[in-house]
Length: 271
Image 1 (tube, rainbow, N blue to C red):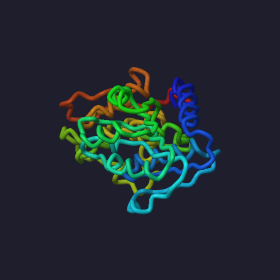
Image 2 (cartoon, rainbow, N blue to C red):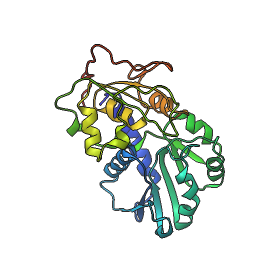
Image 3 (cartoon, rainbow, N blue to C red):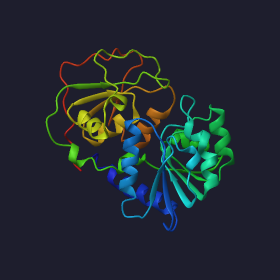
Image 4 (cartoon, helix red, strand yellow):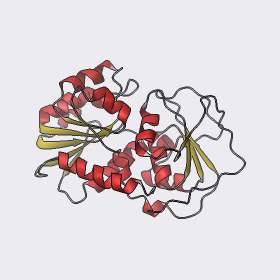
């Protein structure tokens, strides 16, 4: 782990837990998505590990949302134009709970439904990067904290064999359409489990991607990381807010993603 992150993790953990109130009746409302979302859930569970809470998955159960005092809604990127499913159900979630806290997410107010929901919500809304925070801070009770994935325990995945380059670029509605290198593997969709996802990153020295949680996992595992943005501010925003300058390198827009002659592991960080 980058050593400068530890104080921030402690600070943001305290801030997120303080937003929950008295902890007497907590429901973790889980969304759905790819393995990056699974890493968010795993980090959130570790953050909440000392608290009593129940967990509810929205996937396929929108008509069965429970009632309770406080809902913790998992964060992520489902508040943008390509993907805004959580924005579409957020008002319904609020009807079922006295208090709602949305954990760190990215927001794009160019999507009208996102702007509409945030303008009328009474929930506490955490952004995970400054660009999103600046967009929403005058609309709602907006706060700023690191993505929940940072609270995951990456230690078991830091040791072992590693070699070569992992290209893990997306090819979906959030892609910019930039060239994707041969041999690309979108591990956020391709791996069967979160465990396989993390070991796949662990076994490479250099990771190139436009997936937010591939970047986060790779940095936390001490890898050399190069990234391209997706089609809105999310990726540069998370990188700028979460890491020190120079920690990861942004690829040029027209970079053909040629594999370098030699990739070296980033082993200078210790947990």
